[in-house]
Amino acid sequence: MYIFFAVCLLMSHVKKNKIKEYWTTSFLLSTPAFGCIMSQDRFLLLLRLLHFNDNKNQIKGDRLYKIIPIIETLRKKFKTIFKPSQKLCIDESIVEWKGRLSFKQFIPSKRHRFGIKLFVLCDCETGYLLDFIVYCGQQSHIDTLDNLGVSGSVITTLLKQYYKKGHIVYMDNWYTSPTLLKYLSSKKVGACGTVKANRKGMPNLCKKLKRGECKLAITKKSKILACKWKDKRDVLMLSTIHKHQMKNINKNDKLQTKPNCILDYNTNMGLVDKTDMMMSFNGTIRKSVKWYKKFFFHLLDIAVLNSGIIYNKLIDKKLSLPSYRLQLINQILEKHSRERFNSPGRKSTNDNPTRLAARHFPSIITSTGTTKNVQKKCHVHSHTLLTQKTRKDTRYECKECNKPLCLTPCFEAYHTKKKY
Image 1 (tube, rainbow, N blue to C red):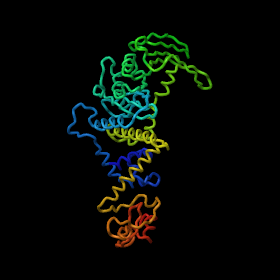
Image 2: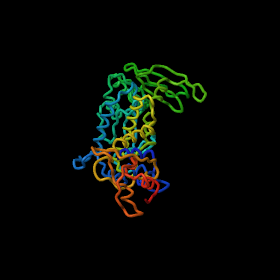
Image 3: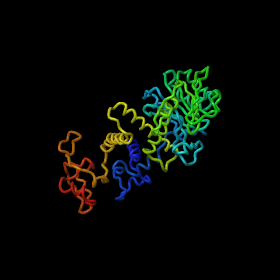
Image 4: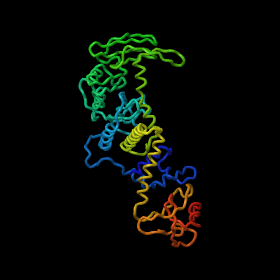
């Protein structure tokens, strides 16, 4: 399965219209690496048989049953192996899905508007995804608090592990309310977010402002800063971590004055959208699969992204996400391909797809036991199409192709002729 996942990750670097095109022998479209790693039939069989739960025990109406073991495992791993910075952000993410699905959502502001909605908790400093909740209506795994509603309960569910540790969370206006910020403040969690004007408990602010004007107020009991600033439209914010401060910035060679809370919010929010964009450029298999398989590959992309972030924190030489993915694929293949090809049993007679293209050098067949000067039958002599097949032993092989070959003339013939 490691080889299968490596092929899936590699597909994100080589864009094709159909899965079968990765194994085509067409001169214009061929990518021989895929055939060398795994056959087309084996890959399609594994993809078809890919399941994550026993269908026999499925509970009627459980929307996430087919994928829930993977979700629970990754949520636990993501939270335990990484220590986040002080600043966190919570936003919505969407996994594109245009087919039929009972809990499919529509978010017009996202890159992909239709699909499976996630509530995502990210580290603002690195972009590491700490936790997520899959939204599937009433079955969503949200610990609901009556006075906070669904939106506020999403925040408390994701932040439960980070109470009383001095963290700050940024959120958008779907979540933010005076009641939520007061609750988070009691848990020693600072908060900042845009807010809707009709939220219960909002202080009265000036109704009409000219562009660039700002109105600030602080609630007496909970000490929450309320800010209204006029840009192209009214922007309302609540914060428990900012004060009455304005800051001058240079935008398009013009000096502008903005509230410090809005500048801080703009710096730390939007991280989830950037992460979605990075994974959309590097996504694995997306077509011709069922929703839970597509969702699994999205989770696989998140796991790779998180591992890349951890790698960059531990290593001085930073790698971009595509470069890290390629190194990861190489290491998986180096370890598990060797185990697969060196396993005991009858050797395959199929030709290596790279035999006519890659660089090849002869080497002496290495001994695996007590026998010295190991010899094997030459592949060309035993599989030739031009003369009668014979048996001839040789001490040499091509390690790249994993084929025993006579030095002359078989080594040259095998690597230069389509028919030998």
